Image 1 (tube, one colour):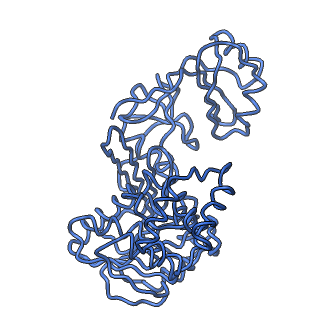
Image 2 (cartoon, rainbow, N blue to C red; image 1 turned 120 degrees about the horizontal axis):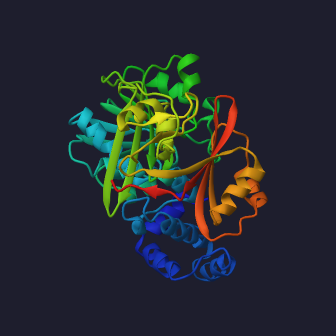
Image 3 (cartoon, rainbow, N blue to C red; image 1 turned 180 degrees about the horizontal axis):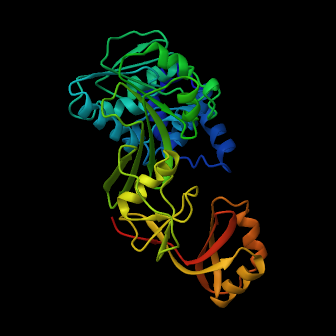
Length: 397
């Protein structure tokens, strides 16, 4: 564990030089023991902190702004919001609350603070945390923010907007259970009731229970980045009337493409036979419960009203689609025959609504061909069905 004394050393001119020297080492799984021994011979008890910092900086490339100058720990990096997602939130706060002072009450090493201080339209930024070492790291990582040591459940500012991230327990492990978050999620919501608040949570958080059992009436935003669902964010005191929102972010050629859809959007769509393509909606859309809304926006329809797979004759911009080649009975003999006839050698298997292990099925199909295909297995009504499709195609944004 990196201590406040370690942070003070790492911030000193001697520590900066030591980090330069440590950066020259491989510090891989295979070399770590030998590399730490070398560092220990030169820097004694500071060796573990040097090794952890360098390894974290390498892993933080693409996740944090200018990561090669950051001080951070493995646990803090795991919890840190990706800079694209954090920047999007900072821009939204600036747009919704012009000139607001924003207080991150669980600021850790400053991932959110870095983006808040970089966006125009924010009136001031405050960060607080109970962990002294992380606060010292945040002071190094972020300029332009006021920092203080404080309990998230003891309000210390009159900031216009609050941020909190109780999505992990003290041991750093991720949890989806409302009663295991630290600080306790319900306590955070109660502490800042009546004030604009954004609470970052793990994407699997049971927000249905949060609404039904605990009376949460704010907005749940589920965000994905490049196809991976990153987080759920609970917003209070918004005035747009939406209760569910999906934010789909994709970065291509250095450009950010964002799509948002809410439960206020139209959701009229139909159920029907497959069109030219099958489309698996982005995970943020699925987690937010907005599959029908997204289908209606893009002229798609459902194969079954309870299954998230969609179909249509055009792939939405930026999305993946699978050209339907044929529908096959959900029997392994029929699947093996159909795939062999199409010279299938590699197979992506997508499954929804049917109890099938894709890896085990792939082995049993004994593919011997040369062409890549996709097998989409799902349920329509009460029956399992399979669609042999071409390999995935992504339509340009």
